[in-house]
Length: 65
Image (cartoon, rainbow, N blue to C red; front, side, top):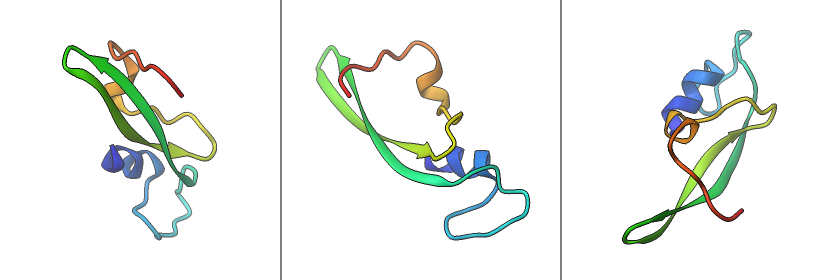
């Protein structure tokens, strides 16, 4: 998911660029209920919003904050 965020922003961590599409803004916990129990992931965020990792777009219902 971190690589997806870097590709979305157009730069890696601590890099500057005129083509930059936003600012990385930490991580947000997402919890998914599975047959074997709940699993919590740290999902990367972008300050201006609009970034959603591919695995969270469809077919993945999150529970909790």
